[in-house]
Length: 102
Image (cartoon, rainbow, N blue to C red; front, side, top):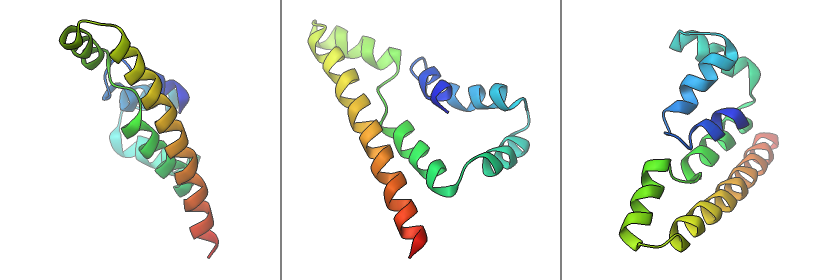
């Protein structure tokens, strides 16, 4: 899952393709079945939250750099969103596990 998350730095869509390669399938339905078997619902939800909040893709970082004419904001954006996404994923996982036990 971390490899798929890291490949999304190039483009967010890459995470699905990476999961397909890592799980050895080219079919979307087969990948869904394999992911259901490999992940608990709490882990899957945490991955989705982390993926959506993760640092922007390279094109977005380049656009931020060009618009601000500085490396300060792109670096801040990447660092801040990485911390937020990992914290959000951890909180989501814990909340989903806690709610699952109720």
